[in-house]
View 1: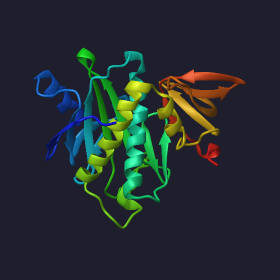
View 2 (view 1 turned 180 degrees about the vertical axis):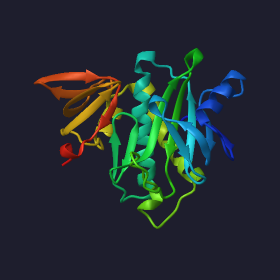
View 3 (view 1 turned 60 degrees about the vertical axis):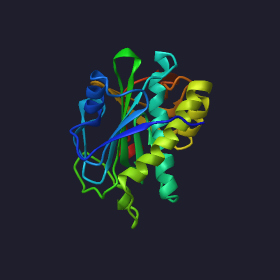
View 4 (view 1 turned 180 degrees about the horizontal axis):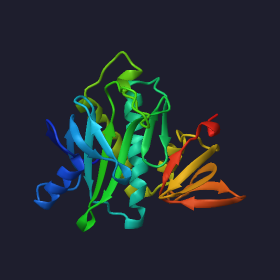
Length: 244
C-alpha cells in the first residue's frame, strides 16, 4: 500500500514545523507534503525543547490530514518511530535500535531521532522528525548519537528521507484502513526497557514502575503498587540503578 507524497526541500530552515505551518497558512501545502532540510537551526522537540540539526543531518515535517478519529491521531507517533528505525536498519542492518516511549528512537541506547506531533487547524497534523546522521560530540544531559558514530559508511539526508517516507506512508495507509494493532506489535518489538523499571516524569511529578508495554490506544502501561496505570503523556527516564 502506497501514498504519493511531495517533498519541498530547503537548503536551511529555522524549523521545518514552522515552515510547514507557514505553507499551510498561505495555501501552499496539502496533505502528504513533506518539508525537508539538511540544516535546521531552531528546531523544536517535545515540551518546547530545541532540536538543531547540523548540515548533513535530517530534519523534516510531514503534513497529514488523517481520515481517522482525532482521538487516534497520537498513534501516528508510533508509526513515525517504526519508519525511522526500519529505514536506518535498511542502510545499516546491524544497527542496534530501540523505540523509547513515546517519541524517541535510540541507537546503541543513545538518542538518534526525535519525533514531534502537532495539531494544526482544519484537521491537519504535523509530524516533525529529526535524525542525527553526523557524529555527535558529548553534551551534558543530551545522550545523543549520530548514525556515522557507529558506522564507517555515510549516508545523505535525502537518501535516508526517501526510505523513511516510504516506510512511513506504507504504515500510515495500513493504520488508516486497519487500525493500530500491527503498529503496536512492531513498535513493541523494539521497545526500550520493556518489563523493566522506569521513571515517568509528568510536569513536576515522577512515577516509577514496571514498563509493561502499550495498550490498544497507545497509552503506556505502568505497573506500580500492584496496579496498572495508563499514561498518555510524559517523559521516560532510565535512572542508572534501574538499567540492567
